[in-house]
Length: 409
Image 1 (cartoon, one colour):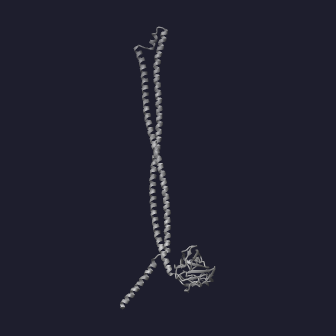
Image 2 (image 1 turned 120 degrees about the vertical axis):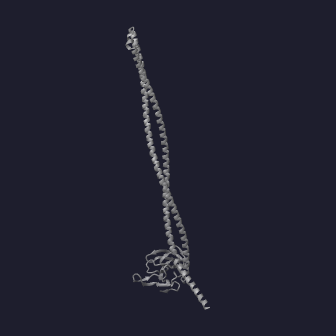
Image 3 (image 1 turned 30 degrees about the vertical axis):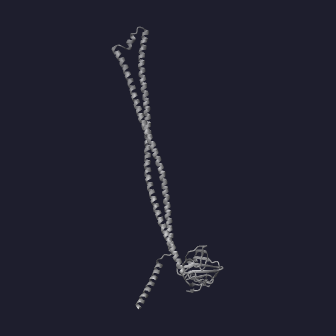
């Protein structure tokens, strides 16, 4: 029986140790809402930075797309101009071929005219020489055979007409040859001009083809940049989505932490209310510095303390002593982070030296609602809660209006 009792006691002891150590472990490892909120703010800053980077990359990508469209238009214009130039060159090549045919034709005509002229001239000379050699014809024989002076004149005129006819024929052939040569030279000059124009077009075509090559290179670079911008934008989008998911997860943790802290805080709130309608602002009851005259801890001189100091633990919840309206929630060099609440029945409370407050000006609060956490901000030597109480604008001793149970530490 005794052994069973020892076993039962041991089991209970182990259970208590487990609960105590488990509670300590939870207390040690559970994150506070302030820590989670700080992490949320950090994540939001990262998300905003990623969003800004994504927006910048998007702007670069859109500018790149605009450049690509402009270059496409430029390349189309170059292609159209190249096609027109190519057609113009082909036209000029065809004209040059026609000029060559015409020049060759005129060259043949010129050769024929010159050959006819030379043949006629040679034939004329040969006929005259043959007649003279055979004695059948000579100018002197024609002249001496004249029977009379009139016959002589007729014979001279006949000779002149024969010579004149041959001369005119030769001259016509000579004139025709000169005209043909003039036309040939004119055609040759026009052909040279056409060839020069074709060479100019060929040079222009080469320049445009080089420009097209450079445009192709630039297009390749722009497309590569576009892919980089698009990849960077996708990367930032993924990072932003990941951060947003982390923020959502942390916000869920924050709400859970706030609920847990609120529950823990409410468990430390006694709920006792004095006849004046006020409750204690924290779980601690130790008064470390009373209201009224005291020695200033910084100067050592005698001074008047406007409230009471309660020796609460750092980070302990601070509760509203009564329902009311927050008239200010701010920071000062004296009270540090502090909150003022007007309770509407002549009472106004001030809670000072907090690590942070959780309310804002104009907010309605209820008695026992957490308004901040005990800290050491402002003119303070150690973590504690300073409570000042005004009654219709006059400073009063809070201990005269709070529930009993306090003591001087």
